[in-house]
Structure formats: C-alpha cells, structure tokens
Length: 183
Image 1: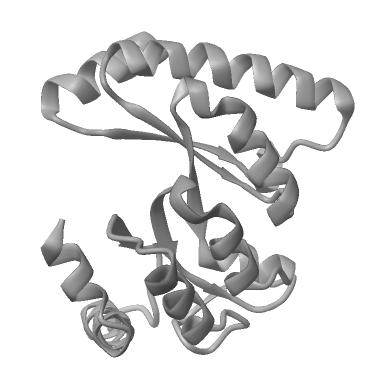
Image 2 (image 1 turned 45 degrees about the horizontal axis):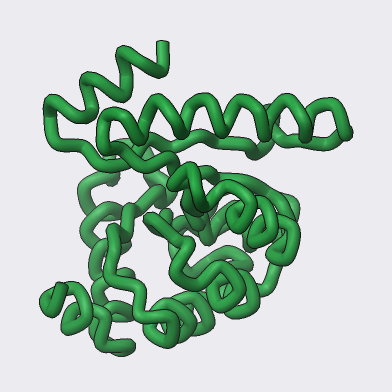
C-alpha cells in the first residue's frame, strides 16, 4: 500500500506522507517499539525512492521523539508537530519545538484541553505564544496546517474565518510570514 501512496504522492508533487502514532496508534510496549521502528524504516525507504518524506506524528516525550528521529534521520524521517496533541498531553510546546528543531517537517495547529478534546483555537491548553516563538527561534518555514475544531453546526464558515485570523495574528506577531517568503 505504501508503494502506491508514495508513487501517487510523487506524481502529484506531494512531498510528505504523515504516519500518525498517537491515540489508538500510540506505541507503548517494547514489542510495539521494535515493530514501529522496522515499519518506519521500511516505509521511509519506499518514500525516499519516490522523493517523499515521512512525517511521524507521535505522543513520545520530546527527548524520546528526538532520539527516535535522530536514529531515523538517514531514512529521511521527520516530525509532524501537532500543538493539540501536545497540549492535550501536557507537554511544553517551547521545549518540544526547540528540541525537535530542524527535524520538524510540518506543523498542525490545534488546541485541546489537558486530557480533553479538540477546542476552538485559544480556548484549550495550547500556549500559542510559546509555539510561535519557538517556531521563529528554530527558523521554521514549513507548512502550518490548521486542524481546528469545526465549531457550532451552521456556523462553520464563521468559525473557520475567526480561527484563520487567530493563526494569522500569531504568524504576523512572530514574523513567520517573512521567514516563509524568504524560502
């Protein structure tokens, strides 16, 4: 299956395939860890043959995630950083982003309450000042993908507009639009 996905990604010019290792796909046991590392390397080899990067989204703590990425960097595996997953677990955004640094392939902007569900941006536990300050410090200029809560039925368009403005405010505040334009 990954051969077909990587081949299709290459044909359409996609540069990243995300592999989620969170929630029901979290890695807990030693056996799961070994199987996951083998799988990631096999997937990464296939992806590299098609000029596609594998972005891993995980709930590993920052030092373990960084070590995992260090071990997989020869396979071109990078991090998909998700602000909502991190705030839902209680991780420190600044520590995570500055630890992962240049190993971040893309960023999902989402907000969650600690141990809770996805919320409207700015109403959960995510510290967006820490997120965007750290992204600026590490020189991040990749994709910022919103995975925000949909909002009230019938008012989705209004919710989307307000959450886009929320993110744009932080991008502007921390000068990330300049970094993206320079790449």
